[in-house]
Image 1 (tube, rainbow, N blue to C red):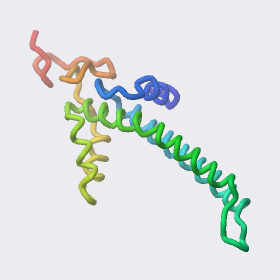
Image 2 (tube, rainbow, N blue to C red):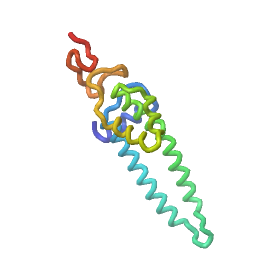
Image 3 (cartoon, helix red, strand yellow):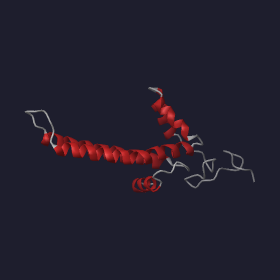
Image 4 (cartoon, rainbow, N blue to C red):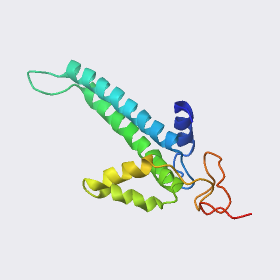
Length: 146
């Protein structure tokens, strides 16, 4: 799955928590978030430095408007981000509730990165068909023997 295809896929499944997501879809989405963050941070730095009144230590209105716009963008991206995280866990035949492991200090995020980087189950699982379109050999990975 290419970068544009992954972004389209996540947006087309904006709030869909069912189904499965490939690793490429998940990691390209995170690359998209990093790019959005970098662009937002650079713009905020430029506008902030241009609108800073050094005498009073306050920013101009443009800085606050841009901050509000960036916050709205992040809120708009929160739901598809949670959805793709849950679908990525589904690809490994794990419940979406595993996401709450992220909240465990220190170890939680590391465990989740391992989960997100691990290959999904081959063939269909309880959350749907393999997003790669692969079928498990008969008798393996829960595939019925023929």
